[in-house]
Length: 42
Image (cartoon, rainbow, N blue to C red; front, top):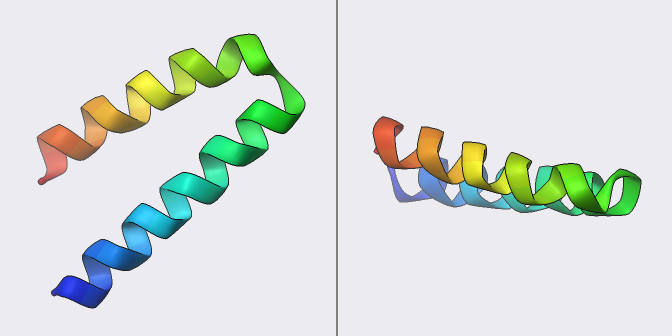
């Protein structure tokens, strides 16, 4: 289970970085959505 959570966190970080690289303004919203979905999923 820990490996699954770790993988999810790593993927989330990569997605966040890609958002930051492509669209800084959209990144903040994307991070909030990711954090919200993570909180609900966890």
